[in-house]
Length: 192
Image: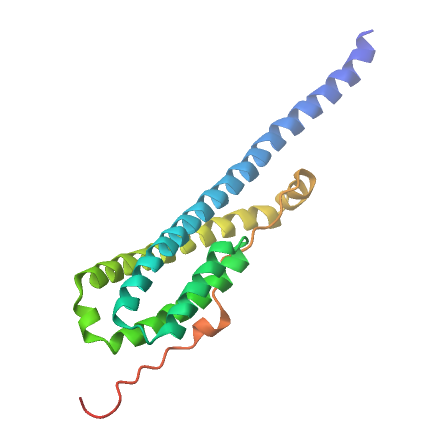
């Protein structure tokens, strides 16, 4: 009976050793995935803050610039796209569209000096600028967590374990290719 017990103990020992090796790896994947999700929630949080500020900004500008309906409409449409985006890629594309629309809105604002001096407008612009900065940081944090997680998924033995446990690479929050082009600033060239 003792001879039959030795192979069983060896098998149990191997199973215990494998379990002790797999549990920390699995928990590492779970922790990494949670970190990515938490970082994405912060991106989402800042995007929501941005979405909440924009209607107030648009209403303030509308009060001064009634004839600039096309620009205001493009901001509103881009905001709606961002609000409806579900994946990081969709959000990145909608975010780029909204950034372009906001840039055009700011050009309109330049034509209305009374608007620039309005206290409500200045406060909204300060809040929007702060939100934009927080959004940049949140996207950087998210991409950092994605990089850490994806390294775990790609490296050996993580690649095998990730496949077994169903952990896939995460998607980065990427900027639009057009974002690489520097904006052109033209002050009219008339010396004023």
